[in-house]
Length: 312
Image (tube, helix red, strand yellow):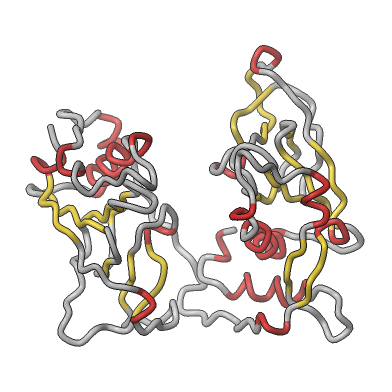
């Protein structure tokens, strides 16, 4: 069964974010702007409602024809769409579980595409399963709740931030090579050079190499992906492990620092590794105190002010 047999496929309204008025994320009158990204359900900003332009309806699917090709999401609020974004409206009544299942099936075809080969012409003809598995209907979806909705985030004045070498902020350790033949299934997190699941590739039966409360950064594979580790773990040799050097790390500060570290990803790739020495020398910008030291309290307070921060 093809996508076009299940969904009415239409091109979005093709808006350019730079020409639109962005409002605060907590603005209840704002409208989500969905773009060709693979994160945050496709939402990259919240916009002021545009006079004379009705947003797309809640409950339909958004699908990226370019960019992060075939990133597909169920939109639970009305939204405006960006360039090369398609809307998929079910031709028959579907439950949320069914919609999410089809999102997964469409995204599973992403390996066929890349930046130079988009899905604009072929989206409608992508094959989907004729029968939905029973487990889809038996899966319970519990919405994420937060006490932070409606809380205005603290402002950040980035022009006043200081520059710091990662090697001055952290002590570095390298992971250790462990082949699949040497692994047995267990309960210890094995951190690999991947971009999802907090870096946990699998669970192994081994003594943890590293203690918790640290940041792992991939120097190979998905280069520059960074995660906070709250449990003891084993790390592969493609991962560098960073512990706070002379200051106290916690999960809130880690979320802030991780975002800054990940902003360096564009400088590296599979062919240009972010080696241990390069990583130590890398400069990051962070809020600073009047004395010039990193303002860890500012970072913690900012993360705690964000919606859903109580779910970290």
